[in-house]
Image (tube, rainbow, N blue to C red; front, top):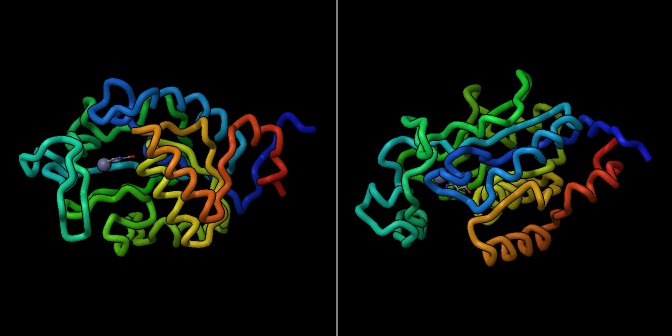
Length: 227
Ligand code: VGL
Ligand code: ZN
């Protein structure tokens, strides 16, 4: 058994929204959200290809309760369905707990790629593959969607972590499966907004063909993603 391994070149690590705004003291704090940071830093040592998504909202975003004078966490009908009214979070214009910056302890490398989402004022985007209208993909500056970019980079398998599993990390995993990527979610490298939401999302991911395991299980079975 090897103690050190590197994921094959068709496998990428995708860290979804590990941002201050979703950590304790953030505007949309996920319980213990910051506790995933060491796991993300350890995991990345095993990957040549690392992708990130960043929730990145303009002021007066459609998902903000304040935009509509609505009660936070209520539901509002919008053109693409029911939209949760979130507290202002992940704002491009801020750098406090309502800002969009990544957690400061995360390790980034020059070769990492970041896809920003939720940049359209009128459509929220939980998934890094498709906005909540389930039609429009967030795009890199080169015009590629995340699926386009991954395919161009020779990636067909994603190891997914991040915040929150019941919303953005989970919806990203489900859309990755729809796009025919193989998906492994590292359970303990995620946290969730609600426990019920977490269980429901895990069931959906497994149902759709995804694998959900712990980082300990992955460390013991690196052949799952090694050449
Ligand atoms: C998220 C709600 C609103 C997330 C983002 O990253 O899970 N959740 N915006
Ligand atoms: Zn958001």
